[in-house]
Length: 491
Image 1 (spheres, helix red, strand yellow):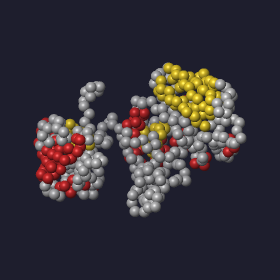
Image 2 (tube, one colour):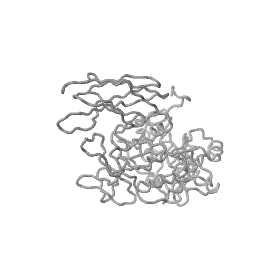
Image 3 (cartoon, rainbow, N blue to C red):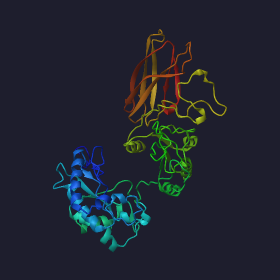
């Protein structure tokens, strides 16, 4: 807080719809079941327990209660609500605020309650999530706003806006709801928050469209994706694969625990135990979608989210940038954004070779000299070899030395090289050392990795790196900017 520009403290928010959603926390019935108790007082006691568990694990705020009034039970989030009656929902909301926030918020058993979703989120057309809402002001105030008003009167200090629009106005930018009603009429002086792309409709916001599934041939989402891309200055396409397991009947080998390949339309799993492939191309219609977006002429950045290499020559040729993220973990989205916006200088290097075509396989780098020259249609070289990696900085190598030049079979030679960051960006370079035995009674790989080093340096600086390796006569290989390989012969 002391180091931030505005001095605003961090409040860790947690999901607590029916208990703190964390390992070891108590799992209570979902709100739809809790509403069926018709016992707001008992629900308040439950919220006290939830607040204690949440605060004990560092949470200071919770994204509950859900005070949406359900009009159409086809809606997927019906389970998170207390039902369809605004009066009962209001009563549960009041007790939730009292139970979660307690007597005072700085207590060890209190958390900030967040009322959501403001407003009319449960009244979307067709029961479709985030679909438009068509409603007059009288019904809006008498039904959908009632639970929120009562909870605000009970002392709620945080409200999350809804993802839908009401008569064409997105709830996240609805001045009537957020200013006229909430602030001025109700006197609310707490937080107003949003999440997960709910800022749709703002002219300078990030546009998002699913486009297509990982597998399957449905092009239903193409039109929306192309419309978003047409309105954007640049397009980032996250494509690739999935290792999300399908736990339905017949999808798991009961002897090994491995996944079983199925044709279920809902299963996008294309990688993982038991999920082997004959090719390395993108599955489904992902490539087709990329090609359609490319026709718009916008800068195109491809982000691969995947568990195995992807071989798509068309994307290599036409994308303006490719970022290999693999499965990047729960903070992966932030890391990817930091790289795309230039906040972080990438320095990773591949630990597996990516072929141009599956017909080249295997393409692992430590190939032997006896394996032939090339195929009729293409060579043996990988599209991106082991050790490949780009950076916003440019590094140059000089003064390569091997001392001594000749050693015994069990001897040791020391290799040193100057690495210079010749760019204006601070960066980090993985300096890789490879050796090759030129005279051996058995066939050996053309090159083999030996202990390498990472050189982190500020702009326009030089570092001298040293390493040691055993062997009699060998070549050292190094990788330089843009993945070109250069060999320094020594003897």
